[in-house]
Every structure is written in C-alpha cells, then in structure tokens.
Image 1 (spheres, helix red, strand yellow):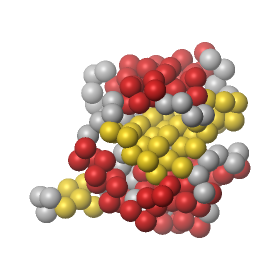
Image 2 (cartoon, one colour):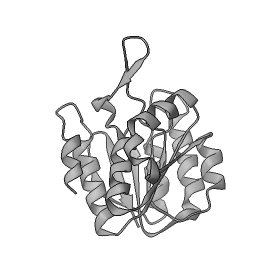
Image 3 (tube, rainbow, N blue to C red):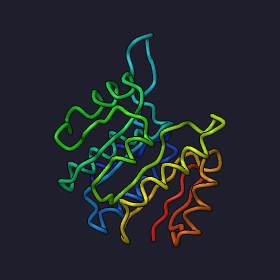
Image 4 (cartoon, rainbow, N blue to C red):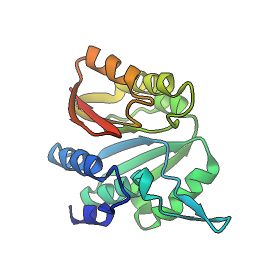
Length: 186
C-alpha cells in the first residue's frame, strides 16, 4: 500500500491511526467504505481550497485505498461546498467514490449495503450535540455492519464517549487508539 506514503506528512496528526486502520482493512479484504463528513481542506486566498493535513484528508486517503483494492467509498456530507471540494481532491479516483449530499443520519438510515469500514466524522466535536449525533450514527449503521467490520471514530473525547460506551456494550472491542481516533471491531 505504497500510496500511504503520500499521507505521511508531519502535520497529519491522524496518519498513524489511518495507516493502522487501512492496513487492518486490507488484511480483512475490506471493499466497501462509508464515511460521514468529507475532507474539506482549508481556504487559501479567499476562494481556493487546499489540503489540510491537520484534518487527515480522509476522503482522499479512502479513495486512494478504494482504488488500490478495487473497492468503493460512499462519502456523505450535508454541505454542497464540502462535497464539491472533496470531489476536486478525489478527481483521479472518481470511479471509486460516490458522494451523497444528505444528513448523515438520514443517509445511514437508508443505506442498504453491508459496510466493511465505517468512518464517523460528520459533526465537529465542538458542537454541543456532536456526541449524541455520533451515537445515533453508529446505532443506525449497526444494521449494515458484520463480524469483520471496522469502525473508526474521529475526534476522540470530544464526541466519541457515548459511541464507545454503546459499542463496547454491544460486543465491540477497541483494537487501536490514538489521541484523535478510536478503531473498534467485533
């Protein structure tokens, strides 16, 4: 998975977590990835957006993984501007990613495919209801998970506490943990 080297940037504080998660996903032969909350980049010169390593650039990373394993990413965001930015970042992998503009809860409620790898990062942790929102996301997505599924929760501590408690009470185990993220599996 040589493409991972492209993300090993000193500012990418999530790199080691993403690297571990995708190596585990590859070991489990994961092909279907679902992401709530797309990589937005950061604004440069009023209107131009560029890579924001502090956010990890998950959408671009997942699309490279999907291209590598001939899989597919379903990436949901409520904001049209965010989706358009993510589309620009993932242009070279457009055959491996589908963007859905919707509230993540509605998207997960209606998603019908089995999910191999789920990344929950749709509502930033500084919002008061972020923890409840992520908990509702995992509850809705649970119907699509299987015994080998991986769930990566972002913004550890800010919005993950309710989700982690719920998942552990439902037989998930933490298999990797960093300051920013928690990876769980059955």
